[in-house]
Image (cartoon, helix red, strand yellow):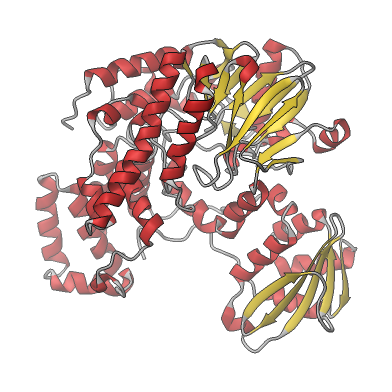
Length: 622
């Protein structure tokens, strides 16, 4: 790899090493965390290979430095009364000391890592009670450890506010459940979860090290931020909440602590170029709005801030440096937006824009603008998708054949497998790894058992991974290579947690049922089922006809086939039973956990029409 570090970028990295260590108080050995059964939930032990300063030949030099920065773990003082535990999860947990206890911002991904982080904080700052919990946005690594920092009954009894931005519950549950199976499988490629931790495998995620295993939980918010800005006092701490909807998450906010002269940018300002659409999949984010929120933070709050900290990576100190950092981040997303739209209006497609757009040196050089997590390439494609959708305007691409049908034709047109492999090997030797990966992928889809094709495609993907500055691109390329060589791992993957399904609004439960309905099994079947949750008084009327489920709030118009009443506990038990929905429903009815008035057998029949998704579907092969 012929990669030269710009001198200013290297100096920037050195400053970030100082910032990543600044305020260090203590940690636990290797940040090694196990659950109640002794299973490892999180550990930095496997990343000890990153302790050497000299980059490995198989890792982009910038990514190596960034991965070393994310290796720093423990409890840190950000400023007076503001602390963070970093390196115990892919995200950070922040602690704001109030008059009587501590406010927790973003309790990590799983309960075990959150509990360990809170224990470390208390060991050095006292056994302060949790007097507030804030979720900055609707991604699981920012709420999943909620029950690791506070018990829900205790929170209710003490009236501890649990604060979240507008739309939090809807977007949290919809992303993690409705599209959860597809997103979860694709996330394996983004984060490299099944890759080995070494210089030839997973080294980082860009925003942190990795995704922990463990118990994902959720305590529903008790207070929603609805206005553009709202000021609240929690445990004596004045907090200005500023909504940033449709930015890094559909439901997101950042915060200013005027009395502490501290600004928390949640995930709209981090030490890396972010994703406008992550590799795992999500709603495309609005780069124009994202830039606007950063501009508002710069204009309204930076003048009275001495530190800016976020829920990933490390803080930036000093008013002048804060302003420079926010300006660079603001202009990064605005430049990508404006120049992409300009070239799009010239008629360039997303792929063509990605090949031609380059950042000016003033934006490309700062360390926090490097593509360790997002990249220019997939961000500009996301912007085009935001405005124009998937179709590039060329009618030849309007109704293309799926890979399973087109791949054999490509192989035939190119002279057969032997000729393709011979040419591809020569291209590989010339370093044409992008092209080799594309060509051999056709051969893999045409002949999945062709060992030579799989190996050469894997070799090309591997080289692309070694050269990638982006941790997510590296992980995707290397996991693709690994699955071509060794097959899809035979593991059982569950994409939802008990807590998430237990707090499903009935409308979203029915949405989840609807996207699982196997239409061929429902054709000709008609029924009306009234669903009720006695815990919160919700009631929805569902109709099945034309092999489609529809539903409206309230009672069934006319005579229902059945009325079903299930509370929060039954919701969780129904969804999490390994026996499947029909058997679980019958068991819960027999035990009294679910009450049915009417034809219970019709409901069982309905549930039997719902598909159980295969968690480990193929990605790099048919």
